[in-house]
Amino acid sequence: MSPSSPATARARLVSRVILAAGLAAAVVIYFVNGSPNASGFELEESKKYLRDVEVVGGKANLLATQLRHWFSGLWHGRSLAFTVAVLSVLAASAYEFLATPLPAHTEGEASRKDT
Image (tube, rainbow, N blue to C red):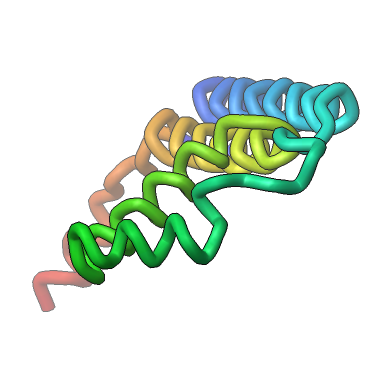
């Protein structure tokens, strides 16, 4: 198959559609949503809460709590827009990589490799 085969062209078109739809959705999410907590105060970020978590469960519990809080924050507000954008780029890249057919094996290449 040549680089301009119908399967390659279709894979590029579909990956571009996936990328355009994902980035358009990310832009809409970014402008529609504000910050997740408008007051600016979150209990999970207070020094007393973090100290209590560390006393009860140690450094591992503190790290796990902060990781869980960070991960749950990816799915709210404007950070959701960045998450959608990154996921759409990854999905489009993966689709194009997996859907593009491999180049055809020619007889001339096999004879050069044997020598």
